Image 1 (cartoon, rainbow, N blue to C red):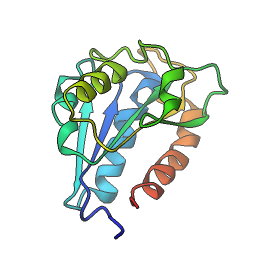
Image 2 (cartoon, rainbow, N blue to C red; image 1 turned 90 degrees about the vertical axis):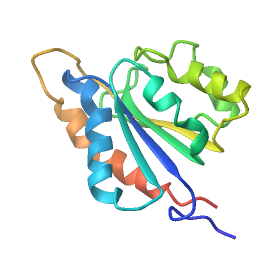
Image 3 (cartoon, one colour; image 1 turned 45 degrees about the vertical axis):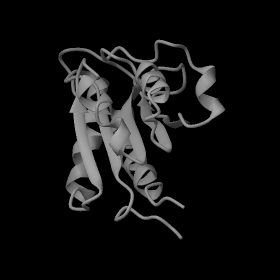
Length: 158
């Protein structure tokens, strides 16, 4: 039997801050909420520094998608997905986020409590700048529609 959004609860977590390209997680989460928020199985959380708000919701979801700006040395505007449900996760450092409780720590806690969602991924756009006076850079603005389309295309579970 194929599961769809109607039967599988999906939690989308927008991480970031109100500064420069770091706000892309919030913007992407808000846009997804406008486009697919009417589906009953969708939940959305926007967080700044603390992960407590989203960490407590992990166990009730079958799929969790984190969205954030990324800094990995790739070209600004590069859209990336990290599958946190696989061994691919092990190649990343323990401190993957600056947003309070980081993603890796939250996943480790959920796993130790036996409450780890079946599917966990982190999507992001390689940031160009993150300063107090600016909005999104052109490279991140240009990549945002691709990010949203990629996330939406992966929401049907098999």
